[in-house]
Picture 1 (cartoon, one colour):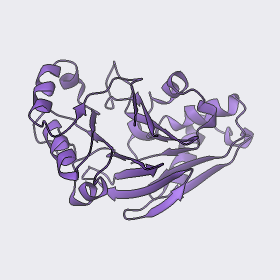
Picture 2: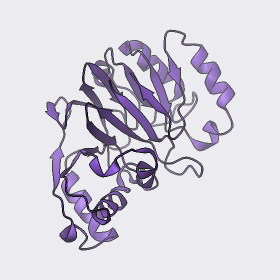
Picture 3: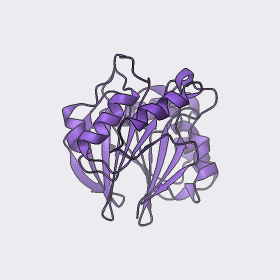
Length: 251
């Protein structure tokens, strides 16, 4: 079984919704996908055992996807964590997180009672860690963004990070149980961002069993939900939904 908790579903500046972040659990292992500046504290609200988190994956280096790491790490130190924490992300992940920690809580890492282990991920890579099989492909975003596929216990999850689908990401998501995709706009073309229609089409092309639409522009998410549902209705072959913070999807 795979259990996905939507810790956050919002974009960078949504005043109502925490940044998009997913807690994925399977077989006693857990990984947090992205950790934006206002999402990290929600982990403690929604996770049963946040102190036992195995790993954090960062899709790309925009603040709403990794600036919550200092709060997560500092609270873990305060809570007396001793278990090693793995942080995975694009090239430069260790130096980025180290600099961020130094700015946010200088010398905090010297007081940590646990090791932080970094893994740099690259498109096309395939490895197993923390109970999951990891695979990656580049999405079409304004900066390099790694989409990720996780497989564990016979179940699969694809998470886009930000950006439009590419042929490589469609292949990566092939026959996934759940695709979680950025849908920043309803139907307008925005450089480096996906939209509802494109995300639904991607899920259909990849043969996904279900599709969660996240990271919507706040003005669209809060005022145009009827139109979003209508767009979902045009793709009856896709079991699509718009999750709320704290929602859980188990399969």
